[in-house]
Image (tube, rainbow, N blue to C red; front, side, top):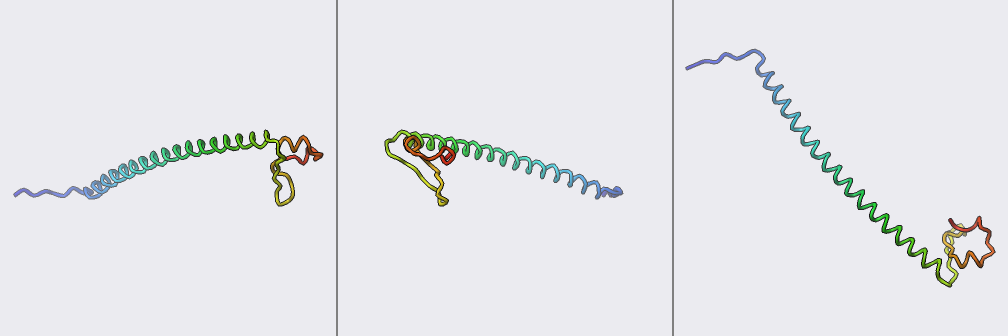
Length: 102
């Protein structure tokens, strides 16, 4: 039977090696999570951009309908300032330009 002689500090070396392996594995896991989080954020940004564009188109379409109708259309806020005023009302109104909505 052969006996082995323990090397001084072998336990510390093994512990350090295990720590390095653990640190590298953990770093790899965190990097993968970061990659997927960034990818999800990009997908969410693209979806939000698409929704903003659809909202803008719908608003433009509604504005075109409001401006090109023969009726007088307006909407006032609780402060009695105009929020929406169609083209026909602007032309027929004596309201100064400063009071027109943007």
